[in-house]
Image (cartoon, rainbow, N blue to C red; front, side):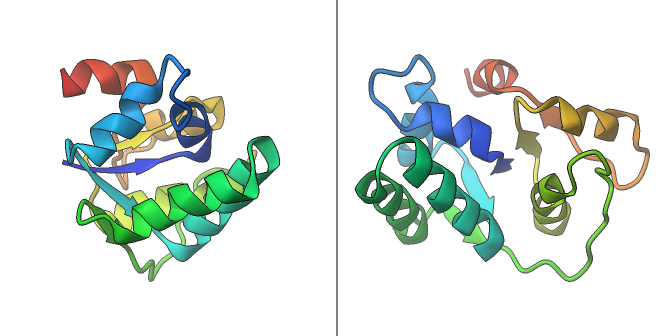
Length: 134
């Protein structure tokens, strides 16, 4: 199963003490394929560095780059479906290009996609994704 993971979900899942650590562990245990673009990786690094540390951010991004269950995606078309926060579109474009099973996010800006007929994306929050995995 291929997924695209919004930064807000990655951010809360990489610390061992987090109740969402199961998500990072599921990635490490190859329960899903994480699809990403260089733009997404840059955001992961930037936000993780702000909230935690440079070294943790580097370790997480390096782990993604080295993982056999991570797939780099090249985006050829920008759909521009999220108008409220256009920066979120990089996740949408990646999900469409990867033909991802799910885009996992806790960001309400993505809810507009639930009403979009084309391209059709499965938008789920982190808890719903946990239920899907188990």
